[in-house]
Length: 136
Image (cartoon, rainbow, N blue to C red; front, side, top):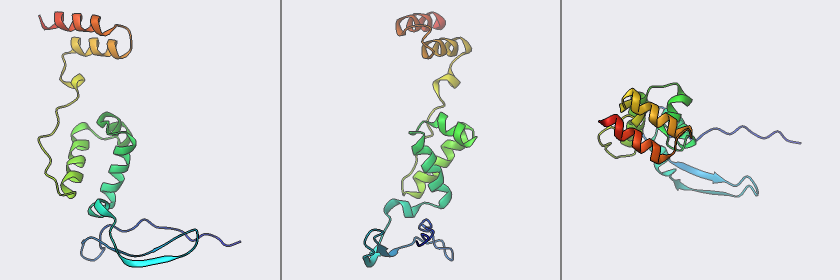
């Protein structure tokens, strides 16, 4: 029995100049046939390995910044900055940074009402009434 050869991630950046890379040969693991040419990995090749790792966590968290904060042990502004870096690397210009989550903007009283709603301690109607009173 032969030991499978290790596989490595495709380098997305040239280690010499930092330019994008091109895949020139693709082989099937099943039948061992191969195709040669100039293949691109699409948008993936525009990202650094660090950015790809961030995107993997971001997607795994389904885009929930709060979950990304917890998974990576980073602050909200740092997560947003890393996301902006990815957006820029993909050739887009990030807009104004999104506002912090509602809980961080809310007064302590409003935050408690929202927490009670999220925990199922009160229903939406009760939360709406309490929030209205909190504004007065």
